Figure: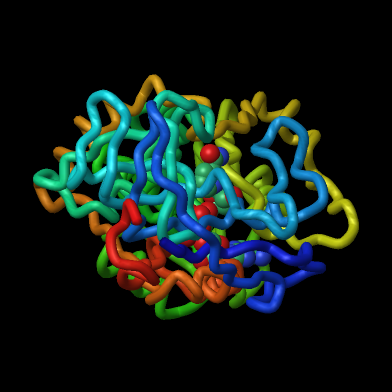
Length: 353
Ligand SMILES: NC(=O)c1ccc[n+]([C@@H]2O[C@H](COP(=O)([O-])OP(=O)(O)OC[C@H]3O[C@@H](n4cnc5c(N)ncnc54)[C@H](OP(=O)(O)O)[C@@H]3O)[C@@H](O)[C@H]2O)c1
């Protein structure tokens, strides 16, 4: 049986282009003892993939994607078609980390993405399979861990979330709202700002492209902020340092504004405010908080069932379009979680062939 995989063929300089990838037909081998064969149905598209599309990834992060090879370490869900691993059977829906391909042979016990991507059976009675790539998966975990652990949210905190219409940001902003905080969101279009105010119910929202960030932030939070959930870095982080009140906290989730930088970006010019205001600035990774997965699934699962979390998805059709979906996300075309629906069974009769 043949399957398809998306391989990077050159590292993008600046913006990601579809031509930086190619789709390759490969033989799919049957699983060996301890392995399962999965037909992937949905695969994740994440901002941070950009960090790995480079000769070297930032120290401490997941490794760079080698050129001319399948991209290992991308969250995916699918259905098992053949199992030689205890505890897994054909028909089970699972998540694993062998994404951007339509079939994957996965070793059941092998840790992936710091544990968050290790082969796991999913309860699709609770939510559709693709929700486990978003709100009930690593995306939800990142928002939850960042807000409640890295930022150490306290009663009464005023919270600013940047890239608030995106996958992680929209969840973090809504979770803070559910916990009773005043929440400000920022995004890159008026339509997204309307979404933040009207659909996500944030207290204030602004389009960061429509003025100077410190002014926009002052207008949205005249008395300052206590927590900044940073998805953007750069000028956003600098504006936050200016607006944070004494003992404020920054949870650095990511710095998307710098991922395509050709030169090392300058740090915020006002970092001294961390000293004068006694700020705590903490970077974190969802994959460093896998111990929170059961708690997050329980709590966030309940919010989803109660209809308290809006989980918009930007769905791109077809495995071959995964690079286009990534380029779109990095440009800001998406609202909510970006997903690729992997189309159909490719070539060959039975999955086990
Ligand atoms: N720490 C972790 O474990 C972890 C895990 C997952 C993701 N992350 C980080 O979380 C952030 C969001 O990732 P995601 O996968 O959820 O993506 P996402 O927010 O769904 O999409 C990225 C969004 O970033 C915005 N953006 C792009 N360039 C920008 C710029 N120069 N300035 C301001 N905004 C910009 C775009 O929205 P606009 O239209 O609003 O510009 C775009 O929609 C990223 O920094 C990512 O690296 C961290």
